[in-house]
Structure formats: structure tokens, C-alpha cells
Image (tube, rainbow, N blue to C red; front, side):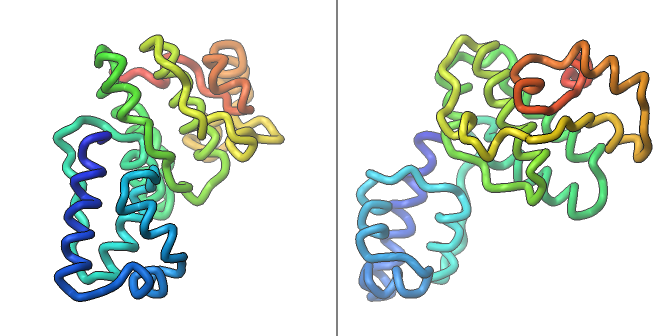
Length: 202
């Protein structure tokens, strides 16, 4: 995704110019400053996908970020948010497992690219913490640095969360104990307990 973002920004800038909109006009439409738009267009900013989508909407353009550059944790967060809004935490977890499958065996540069953009919130702090743990888990597995956004205070829970109980929709003390004993430290340190085997596809 590292190469896709500049391409998307260049296309959006061209679209803005074709509509005779100044940076200040665009800033007013999306609720930011002209200098923020200038940083975005210069490539000095590291925009979230949602920022690019707001820019695209403001200039009346379709926003398409090519998926040819591999998996993206930001796209995974979007899929998780949609699954949760539909009341399906099992589907949300399937998207997380698919991301881990997609980056397994990838080279370090591809793993870094997949997590370079901070994911938007899923709408549930627990799942946001889980995704940060997944970012650290995948980074350590690939022997690559953990992205800075994954260590932000908002990515850690104040209370333990046993994911299996959400998936089952009921308390499950035995399975919770298994998750407590077998959760990867990258998740457990954030208060997220999910046994290691649940992160693998079958």
C-alpha cells in the first residue's frame, strides 16, 4: 500500500485542479486547514484511508486504492467494523485471521506496508486493541519493527477481554482459562485474550 497512496493522492490533486478548487476551498469542504491539504498533496503526510475518502468525496471523485500491493490492516479494520455492525463477531474474527494468513510468509517490506497506515476505529475499543496486538504479533513474526500507532495508549484495555465469550455469546470459563494461558503476549499485554490456535486458519 506504500506505493498506492501517493498514486491516489496524485489522482485526487489532479481531480481538484480540474474542478478549479483551491487547497483552501477543499480544506473548507472537508473541515481542515489549507496547510493540512498542502501537506497531504506534497506527500509529507501519512494519511488514513478515511482522509483520502473525505478528500475524494469533497472533489466528487471515486476513491479507489489499489489492492495489488497486498493485504492491509486498515482494510481489515473496515471489514471488522462492518461485521460488528451486523452483529457478527465470528465474521469479524475471520477477517483478522485472513489478514494474518495473508501476511504469513510475506517479506518484511510487505508486512510493514500492510500496517503502515493506522486503521480507523472499528467502533469497539476491544477490537481496536486486538488489531494493535495483531500488528505487533505479525511484526514480531516477520522480525520487523512494530508500527508506532500500535503502541498508543488507546490501543490497550483497562479490563481483560476474553474474545471467545463474545464469539459464543455466553460465559465460557474453561475456554477463557485456555485463552488466558495461551494468548500471544502481544495480545495479552493489551488485555485481549484469545488462544494462539484461534489466530490460525483451519
